[in-house]
Length: 481
Image (cartoon, rainbow, N blue to C red; front, side):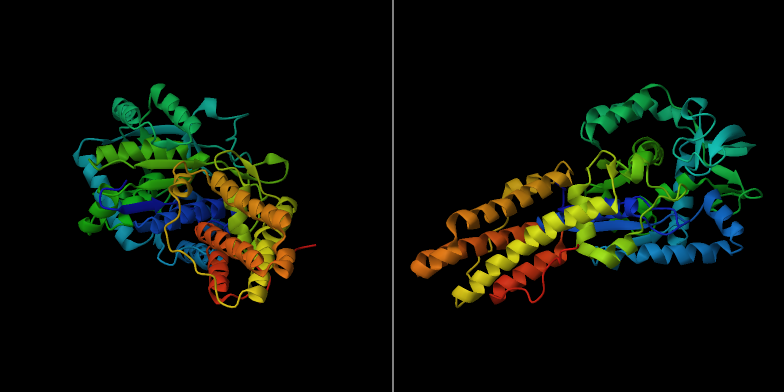
């Protein structure tokens, strides 16, 4: 429970080197559902997302296309901003860009703090580097000399003088933090992974590049020849979005006195749960409360959906054909919460027809048609809060359990209609038939309320139809052949 009923949640910031794909859509939809359920519980919520716009990868892509790098990132950042409407995200979502001046100033202030506390030093750097990950790689992490996540990109060998962060100095402090916070990483098996990684010993990591070799980044304070390494800059967004360096009140409310939650994919495990936590320690700032680690959205053959591989599905294309709510449903209910999960259009269509068109859509039409036909006035609905057992389902961040809970109720209502046949009973025993229909309407309203974090638009349509005692004019989900 947040100390002052404040709740903060953030996604990672995707690189703006291509169109958005459903892998990130899955992450931001899940974070949005958590933000919405917290609002239902009475929390004041700060929900953050945005775009990561510095680094070698973006500089190379813009150069290759013959574009000014700022224009390049501006163009793609707008694509990600468009996800707010496309995915039905909360209206009050905050969107930060790492090229925002207030973020760059915060990143520099964060650097100064870590430096003042003795965690930054300069040395000659020799490393194997994956531009796709924007991370140094050890030989043990490479497969046939390639990064397994970006097998089509050549590993670069970097030799230059860089600034380094004393990651190794914080090993014991990190392990102690993990011990004292057993629910810090969700799910458990990812927490075990990062604990094992830290226990094996930490290597200091580079946090700058020479501006002469890579100019697109935030300038290192006090050294105009260097720019910040992309991770050191980008990770600071989680507090710069709160105005950390210039608005202490908001930072105190949501980071210090709230319970900050970070959503990310499993390829961000090290950066979010070890590197960023060590950086916060170095700056003498409070840790993240919880980091939730998603699996990958995979394409055909179980291969990670990746812009570099080219097997991505564009969420704009999915929404154009099936609508926003269908994509939200699939990302939240059909895809595994923590394991890799296939996203194919065939699987998507099957789920859409069975669970949406033939499920909640058909059930809503059947019940409200009976109500409109046989009940003169709208059914009286209680405004009691949802059952605690419903909210408890969200505590483990496993959306599939929430979906199972709701769709079990939908199936139960279908079975109730088959068993009690209110549409027949009403003809021979009007009062009994009407009572059966009223029971169904009340249960449907409860389902609609539970759907709010998952399918906010559908939830509202059902509740409004019940209040008007009218069957929806159009099917909630039209079956696809």
